[in-house]
Image (cartoon, one colour):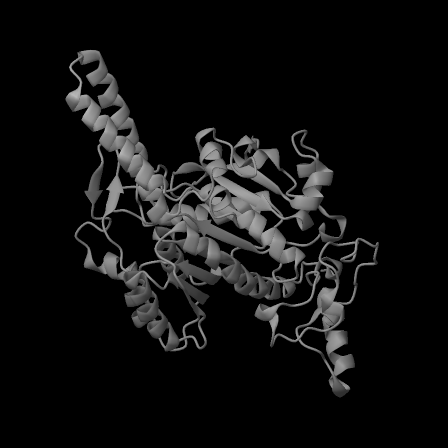
Length: 449
């Protein structure tokens, strides 16, 4: 209805501009017609991509205040958080400790890469558990989230709503707490680097896959890059996730690709805006950064991260890309999840619908990897509150493993004593004569140094 109204208004203004005899009225009509035409174009693009879902999101982006006030968060550097502990974070005057323990906190972090020589900003979401006493010795798993192009890292918060979604899923017992890292993948909305190391240009892959994880690990209480790190992205960020996971197979344990592609195109640079072949004349570099080719070149039995794929069913190109890559993956990795969203296209609405499914799948695996960390204190690992939903069926969990996620309280808010036996949190229910032996081995693993 709004589109029809805009068209009629534009037509009326054009008729007024042509029919009026006064020059002043013609100028006014022309300006108004141009304004309505521009507004119509912006709305048409937004309708296709689903970038803004509400008028509040538009106002928030224009005023540099995200849905969660993310842009108002203080800018910090690694030296601001020397101990990488919740105490150092709560000590900052800008952070309300009680509020952070309830809903988490978003940091705006300056990340300078010594290897890539790139310096950009990143947004980091710390879940409520990061600030809770029972988790003070727990090193959290991490998901690195790569945005699309055009786009910015805060789109994950302002438009996709990933922080609110994760908190809700954890509260409902459908996901596990993780730290979310949202780096700037391109250095500008008009730039497209595809997370690649460009020949004689920006070393974007090195920055995102090595420099960013290194600083996050030094700065925060998280797992080191490896099985307890995941990477995910949509559109161009989906290509980034697939390529980063395969190029750095031992730095990521999980990868989520939402409407991604699997063959790189030209990069787009700014000042002036121009297309550039990221590999120069090297066919070898192109093959090394083409996920389909990378899979085919790996030796039999090579370890690769676990993949999750998603696409909008109405976008034939995205569906074709996902199904082709899924078939390639099936030769090396059984039961790769592939989600085709009904009525979905290459837009934010589709990715908003797919992110909860991806988070359920990925956080479960990341939490399992984090439990294997001998540095993690047993009391810190707990099962989310609430009954397991459909995504959790078939995953058998012991009663002890279903301890409340919000450490120190149960789902009703009652004070509880944290679990202290690691064996009670092992996946599955241990029965039979092996129970005592497994519990003893688990206690030995849990003992410090």
